[in-house]
Image (cartoon, rainbow, N blue to C red):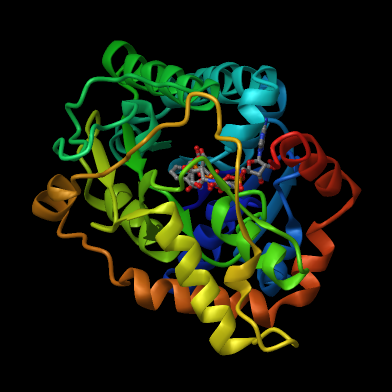
Length: 356
Ligand code: NAD
Ligand code: TYD
């Protein structure tokens, strides 16, 4: 038995593969195009592991995917590959439509063709697990109940709209063709190997390199933060026991405003890696122009996955953020390597006009 993971060189995908092989012996094929967000260094510890194979490729390349499915006959596809950064989707939505919508469509077509050629036992075992986001539900008013699985879709950014579109395709392939699909909607993840364009690693890198810590708008936007290994455990649980056709919300019961997140990072850096001048990294915080269309609040009601599948997060925010800051401090080479010329171009594009 084998599973196929798409986007396994990115942040969550690489954590998923590492955790999977630490827990189980079932081999993993990692299909990844290696965009700016994909980094094989994340999987360096698996070099030489016979249970792991990497294939460079685009989920939209039908011939290559069909060949891969034919040769390896995976009993499940865990679909992480996506363009994943809201700010990039605002600057250039095209890649988001191409990978998240069109790419997912091609992947589904390949899975459908493969599924229709299976015998009854193969069909019964097969799963297509689509990793989606809470952002498809849009923004919550303060005090409104958290997102449940029946919350209406109201995506607000090109990123969330592209993920919502892919969710609809996945649902339709389950409903129309009987493909055994599962969809998960997770809140904001943090932890090792997250590319420093997202809030938490960006703040760590900027703090350590003496740059400003840019808070969009008033910094009171709320996200529900989940340590990445908890997300990986939830996906394994859904794959093992989720009912085909169902969707599961995954969250940390951990709603926090952005300013509190940044203050937590600053506090840990002050403790674990004090500034040479003895002052606080908090002095580097600046408020900058807000993100256009910025969603005010996300919150996940993770009651269904807890009731039906018995999953709950193992980490609190306090334990997870300490591990995360420690990890970045312990991996300066990884951090230096991802800050390429392309990374600096992104900082220029997103932040130069924003600084007030
Ligand atoms: P990421 O940007 O770190 O990684 C994405 C990976 O997909 C990269 O390795 C990239 O090379 C690969 N990829 C991109 N386009 C591809 C293509 N056309 N073909 C093959 N590979 C391609 O993303 P992430 O943060 O790890 O997110 C993974 C998934 O989880 C995404 O689907 C995202 O929507 C979802 N998600 C993320 C979060 C979060 O907080 N990061 C929360 C909920 C859901
Ligand atoms: P991000 O990590 O981009 O995730 P998402 O937009 O998918 O929630 O951003 C998390 C929150 O942090 C979001 O409200 C935007 C905010 N943010 C900043 O205030 N400054 C920044 O430089 C970045 C990247 C994000």
